Image 1: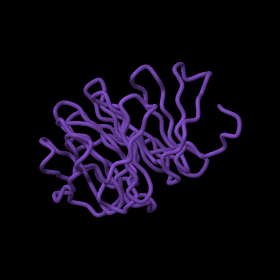
Image 2: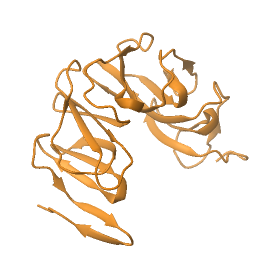
Image 3: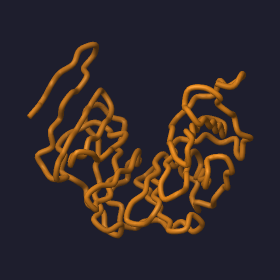
Image 4: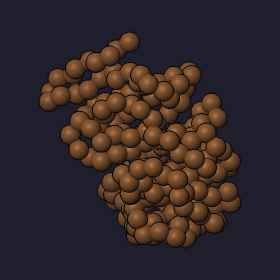
Amino acid sequence: LPAGTTATLTDVAYGEGRFVVVGAAGTVLISEDGVSHWELLPRVTTLTFQDVTYANHYFVASGAEGLLATSPNGIEWTLRDSGVEDDLSATGYGHGHWWVGGDGGLILRSEDLEEWLESEASPVDTRIHGFGYGHGRLTAVGGQSRAFDGGVVLVSPDGETWNQAQTGTVPAMHDIVFGKNTWVVIGRYGTVVRSTQLLPPWGLDVEIVGNGAVERNPD
């Protein structure tokens, strides 16, 4: 990494032939191979970026105090008016929109990266940590940072309505991805949850307790 880069790095995305890393104090790093020749870009903000996504030919990065920035190439960044002052900890793309989520169940969406609208249909008041998209369904995960409960998974078939999936008792969920016809969600305490239909029962693979691992419902 470039000399003097000591900021905490929070997320990474790939697109337009380069890796883009974001982090604290407005840090943005780029590299074409992800190994060497990392370049520290001039800061467009001193706020902390918490998440970055590449989709539909654009990077979208979100962060503290409503921070939102977009770039067509990962190099030239434009600050956007999110219209909120809440921390924005999740970015994603699906149903022809970019999505941003944050504190209090906040979900924003945009078709053009300029106008951002708040979803009135979010059924939760906990932080949104991540978005995923697959089989025509948009998902959002999050939850309160409490012991072994408080995790949520939201599902939207159209980007207009959101329903909370019945996952059972799970800790706060931090990210979700779709692949091989399966949604896989990760969260606190080593939790890995999976589903093939976004319907119960969900399989809870591994939960870390202390220094050991406890396997539950492996099938």
